[in-house]
Image (cartoon, rainbow, N blue to C red; front, side, top):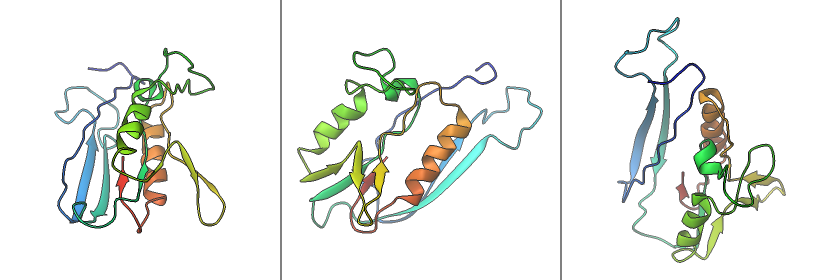
Length: 151
């Protein structure tokens, strides 16, 4: 159980997703154990299409890190800014592992074709569920049709 306004972070790696349409659901209080004034705001669904990740070029990948203090690196050496992000946090370890498989890893930022900067490190210490939804929406709005995305 969480107190009002509390947050929790879970990370999962989906190995070898099949190509096609998938649905990812985020559900809080799925078993209705916490009495709330609004029981209808505990679910967020993201639908996406996965390419066949086993084929094609391994030249480029977008990697987005979402979450709150654990993913941001709050408390680690070098944690700075209003989100307390540290380059010692696990998203940088994931980035380094991806660099062994891909020629280009878009993280923590990259410049889009239109010249705009796309942020990939979205984790922010103290973020609440509403901010996580904003993070997910940001990723959805920046999905590439040209190469895979890891979230």
